Image (cartoon, rainbow, N blue to C red):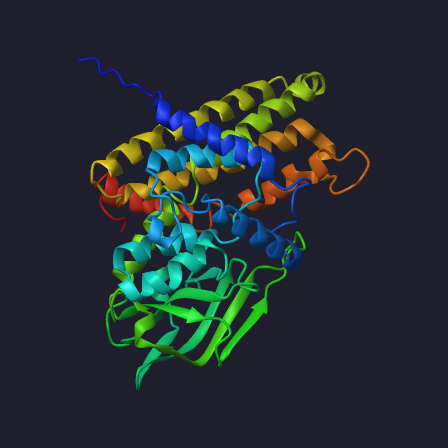
Length: 394
């Protein structure tokens, strides 16, 4: 049986696309803002995200009472396509908006949603993720940071690391062990932690590219009230898996990001075609493959949104999604560097630098993709066992 699919957007959707495209054309900062992983760039990106919020574009798919416009996931995809097409700044509030917020909508109390979501959308309060520890990265169940019950709440102890933009953020959402006697995946609790509370020490982690937003966070008796437990005491693993599904699945990496990268890569090839073909005729095929991969990811995402619109939930297949987009991102940037040759190493205002070294910067970030949100080695195990039903390796 042949199944025909209509992938065209409705007239209303296309009207929304034109509205978004026109607004972005008039408002996207030019020249581009500094990296949001620097103090200056973070501050300027917050101003930009407040501008998005005031115009109703910060969180288009959220309910209106939390700062959104009640748009569908289809309209969110359209917005993301136009956002990246316009070359708009990366979201410094992304870990809150794309990871914590979906978890709050599912598990949060009305008080938590009222207190947090609108300020998050407006970039008035920016959130970092506090999961990884020095001896518990992809093995999240191995965390040792703990929370001890006290009157009215808990006292937190321990260390979190690789907190993206943690040096600048206001709050952290993280897992702490509340029952040390429980099995590894039990006895964990999901906390919402103010980073300026007494007992918190935030220490920036140096990076090869010089940006200083990464941080490790130390908690020494930090008090967190009961109202800032998300999803119930000892229920942290279940709540965290909902966040992980968002991180690996739909929200964190929309296809618009990769469609824009593929378009930039095609344009780069057109500009340097003569030298590139002479150096390696196979580069043209790699560029074409990058375009096809981006379109394949878009089609897969449209299928996912269709399922979500019909009431289904993302499960273990989110790991398959994460493997695909993270490896695709690396391949795209590797192809760009191959096209540029020695010029790929030039950055900033150096003579001969292409796009101020943006492709090298993007490549360095892409290398982290197969690691964060759970390493791809772990994700392949998840796919093998939970999607394909293969037995565990002995």
